[in-house]
Length: 162
Ligand SMILES: CC(C)(COP(=O)(O)OP(=O)(O)OC[C@H]1O[C@@H](n2cnc3c(N)ncnc32)[C@H](O)[C@@H]1OP(=O)(O)O)[C@@H](O)C(=O)NCCC(=O)NCCS
Image (cartoon, rainbow, N blue to C red; front, side, top):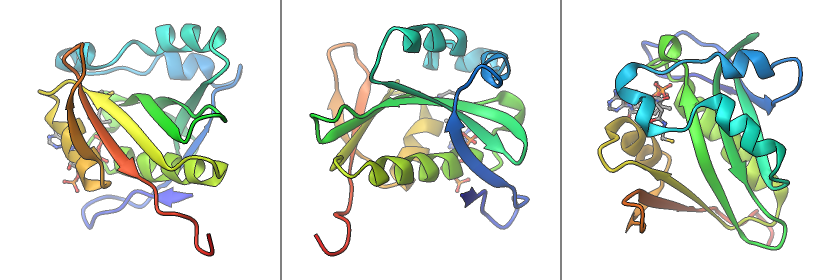
């Protein structure tokens, strides 16, 4: 469990939990600012997509008891790379350190799977908030993919003793 940090941020426990029937509606109702809508697919569409993709791991971001965000990743067992391909914090909860804490949490979850050595993430090149968030977490930009999205990658530290 991570806590949102930063001296100006209130301390709230941030957890990343599976999307279930119970929290699905709340996840689908999360909103972005109008200028952010093109940065990521809608949560409702992502949850529909996850239904037919066995590798998709949709997660709700919880701040205390409140659903404040959503992310989705895949980490197939036959691959040493995980891919985080959806990440959002509700517009009313942004700028409080929740995104940073949620990223830390999901990277911990991915590391705990045991078979992943690197994690990739992608975002629109003009998405400065995403760039800063991922850079701070150690992601290194690799360049644009064929769709013009920036790909960044993080090499996970090997577990101690291996
Ligand atoms: C990107 C996003 C997830 C960040 O979530 P957040 O909870 O607001 O982020 P945090 O408050 O934890 O901030 C983490 C870091 O991100 C960066 N950041 C956040 N908002 C920023 C902004 N408006 N401009 C520049 N950097 C910003 C900062 O580096 C910040 O660290 P700092 O506070 O120590 O400087 C959120 O802005 C969002 O949902 N955006 C729309 C969807 C999106 O773009 N998703 C990513 C692409 S899939």
